[in-house]
Image (cartoon, rainbow, N blue to C red; front, side):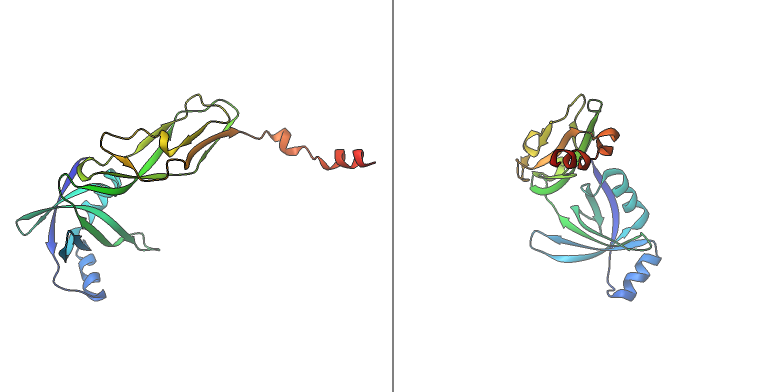
Length: 198
């Protein structure tokens, strides 16, 4: 996953009023912490950060320019307003080059199963331990041509070199079942049962 550079500013005002002023200025209140350092309160450029999340997902590694210093960070938490759908606050985690971290990576199902099949996705993310600068954007699981009875577990997902699966390898990710036909759904077994009882 590519790094994204953002110019951010330290925050010196705190509290709800200060946070509202930060958002009115087109910025997002954020806290950067990790590696035993004191938490640093920052303001992120709202439009740029929202674009990064939209294009690269929340696992994008951010290169933060802060007062002529540079920090690598991973988005840990994004708090979105429940009604107005804007980002209220962000927690960022300091990461170091070469460091391994545990992240949730989205699972994307591709391909079409055999006709008459029903696909059930049980897991939409898989947790892996991977180097901070080599986080996969997603894992693709192909069900092209798969028939009823096909089951894909977490252990079947192809991981990049050096990555370790944290999710239980036996957990079911995708299942392909036989689709119930309308005729079968309309069949009522009750009359047959009554007839046999008579």
